[in-house]
Length: 332
Ligand code: TYM
Image 1 (cartoon, rainbow, N blue to C red):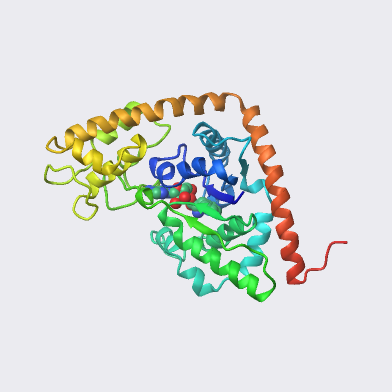
Image 2: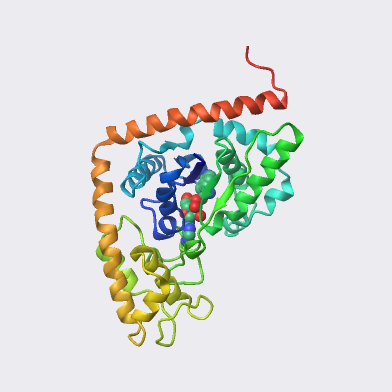
């Protein structure tokens, strides 16, 4: 079975709809015919300041959410990045193959350091994509399901893999990004040309999976739409309505065309009201299941322990190959 790998940062109390529709849903689906490795990227999280108690809590909440949304620990290795030391070790090797200019061109670094300027950004934030490349290459995956914002990091990953393979010996598989066009970029409800993101300027723009469903319904009903009344999918002219149609279609399994027809002549109010109901129906059981899982930490611990064990087996084997090929003397 082909292998699939992906990760998510534990930097918020809840995943949001961008995470879920852009990436996590695909994680769940790909489990069926892949050998899956999914992890919580706590090493990546500390490239910006984190409060220790919160980071710990959010890591466990992330694990609970993954299981609640359908990641099956019997099928998938679910683990915490810091439990697998090879990630940080391979990162260092790849850092020696990454050009300074090449890393400087990563748009996510440019965006994230834009506020305080590069002078105030951490070195960790700068080398973030190199760690991400290590995360991926260790598992030699065929597919990496992510949202559009990760595409450039995956290109760097492929470049580094190729460079290593060429310089030494074929060691890494070139991973394919798995990005579903329809949901690759879910946008902010209040600013529908920007991506939905935990660093958004207003919480009203993000639908959080663990929020009180009533709050989420309200956010949908107050989403910014466009002037005009026609419910039509047109991301250029009608980014707000198009985003709602994308979310609606993804959650209901109905095509955007079918939804356009259904709301023809009915206006935005009806669309938002119905979508709010769909969202409530979707998040309510998810939230209940997550909170239930969080009550018994021992079950989560067991899942993460088993996941780390399998991940370490694979990752250590790859790292040993890498160390051998670059000429490190074995520890004896
Ligand atoms: P993170 O934690 O920011 O987000 C997790 C996943 O959610 C996707 N995503 C979105 N997709 C569509 N629309 C949106 N508005 C939206 N917002 C977020 C992201 O693309 C991502 O797939 N660097 C990664 C974590 C990571 C990783 C890896 C991923 C670390 N190592 C190795 C894959 C492979 C990140 O920050 O994702």
